[in-house]
Image (cartoon, rainbow over all chains, first blue to last red; front, top):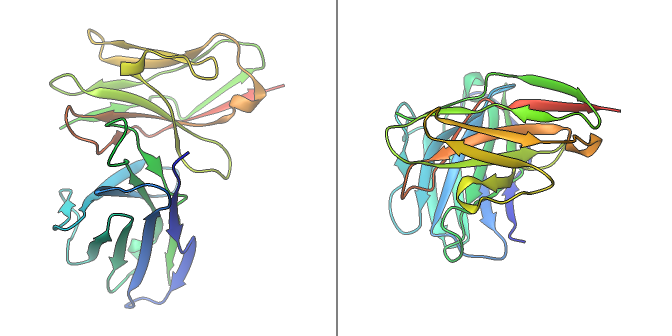
Length: 117
Length: 109
C-alpha cells in the first residue's frame, strides 16, 4: 500500500527557533497534501492544504506566516514552524491522497511530535 | 461550517459483545463520511467510507441522512479491535477531512 513518511518523528527545540517537518509520499505522487495538528487527547484539526506548485491554503485561525508550507515536488511537502513557542508544542500529522486512484483515499504519516521548551 | 461529533470518549465492552460507536455530523449538503482507526503505536488508517457500503474487519456503518448519523457497528467485538476510532467528514469535491474527537474502544477478554 501507499506510504507517507514524516521526518523527524519527534523534535525538541528552544523557544524562538524554527523547526522544519517533512512529509513525503514514498511510492506515489501527491499534488495535494494536508497538514493536521493534534493536541493531547484531542482530535486532528486541519491546519492547511499544501498544493504542489502554488501557495498553500490555510484554515481560519492558522497564521500563515508562522506555519510556512512549501510543496516543493510531487512527493514532498514541508511545514516550518517559525519562531516556535511552547504553545506550538503539538503532534503534527500530514496526509496525502494519491494523484491517481480513489478521489478520497488518503494516507497518513506517522506524525511528528514537537516540544518547544 | 461542518462538524463531527463523537459523544463517547471511551467505550469498553467484553469480547464477543456488540459494538456501536456513535457519530453525528452537521453539514448543509451531502458530505462523504469515513471511519478511520488508529491502533496502538500505529498511524491513522482508513477503516471504511460510506460510499463503498463495505464491511471491513466485520465493521459496518450506515449513513442516516435524516438523523445525520454514521454510526460504526460490529456484532461481535474482538480484542484486536481495541483502538482509537475517528469519524470524519469531507464536503463534496474536497479531500480535506473534518474529524470527530475520537472514541477509544477497549475490548476486554
